[in-house]
Length: 354
Ligand SMILES: *[C@@H]1O[C@H](CO)[C@@H](O)[C@H](O)[C@H]1NC(C)=O
Ligand SMILES: *[C@@H]1O[C@H](CO)[C@@H](O)[C@H](O)[C@H]1NC(C)=O
Ligand SMILES: *[C@@H]1O[C@H](CO)[C@@H](O)[C@H](O)[C@H]1NC(C)=O
Ligand SMILES: *[C@@H]1O[C@H](CO)[C@@H](O)[C@H](O)[C@H]1NC(C)=O
Ligand SMILES: *[C@@H]1O[C@H](CO)[C@@H](O)[C@H](O)[C@H]1NC(C)=O
Image 1 (cartoon, protein in one colour):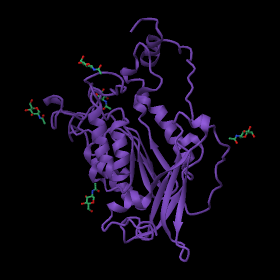
Image 2: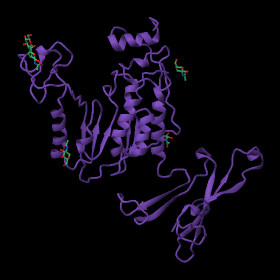
Image 3: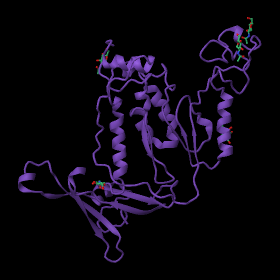
Image 4: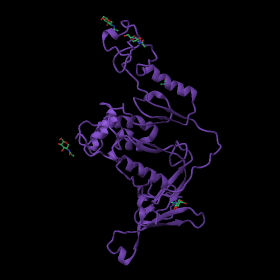
């Protein structure tokens, strides 16, 4: 670190508090679309749900009942030496914790028991990081984040473009595995690589939950103090913008999609499938090649029997000179019908889309 550089000034300020703030470097976070003028919706008046929020469990598995709570180390209640152990100190730690010590395991378990007793019908729980949340908590829906203590060495979160063997990947892998039960495998897979951040829709309502790994910006994460400090380590802001934009765009998606509705959310099988939602692709080229679709519909029952997607390929050399050439892209029956058991390829067989 060169003394007097932007980086060293920041280090001096954030770690020692001895320097002044360096001049702000303007940095624009680009959004694909302009901000809309939507305002906060009015309160519904319905019975509120309850959300539990807890943080910084800091369980200390080396905590020992009877160990010295009045020590000269950062954290007490550990038998660092025999003299600090049970029976050898005038300051014996109690079973449920001490202000000089991190939480004993029993205190952690009592937290989870209390949550279940006090708010048994909580809609969801937020855990904002730091060692740890037990698999056996029995909390039904927990959204977690990466904490600065969830790694060893502490605070070490190298941005993805730094080549180092001191990787924080094992923490992302462990948290991702732990979170899967609550956030599902898709969001968990994102968390494993993103790194540590994910985005998921709350199953009980129209709410998107985004968990950001703010450790990437934490002042004690020394990886930040490179000669050229990164404005967006691991591209998290760019990812966040994409998530916001995707949420903004949802409703109409601009994409060629379909959705299946089930009578029972927890039992998504062919037997409980009750309907198909047809989501048409967009003409606007912002979302890819312009496209539209044509439905084959039973004239009596009006069941949709097939649909054909048409696009115009904008990358052809003649597109701008000769104009759009519309062509068939695929039909659902041709693309998916042969994969069914038994195959459903006839345009009048309602099996796939009715
Ligand atoms: C939002 O409102 C402002 C002020 O009325 C207007 O200038 C702007 O164009 C609007 N933006 C959108 C995206 O509608
Ligand atoms: C800790 O021990 C010192 C003596 O070593 C004593 O003066 C002090 O009162 C003790 N603190 C507490 C909280 O018991
Ligand atoms: C207390 O000190 C004695 C003598 O040093 C030692 O043998 C014993 O193990 C210590 N107790 C604990 C719980 O560390
Ligand atoms: C979770 O529930 C099981 C079964 O009811 C119970 O045995 C266990 O003690 C509970 N765990 C916690 C941490 O509350
Ligand atoms: C990372 O560093 C190692 C060890 O110096 C080197 O062998 C490897 O080629 C580097 N990888 C990249 C992508 O720079």
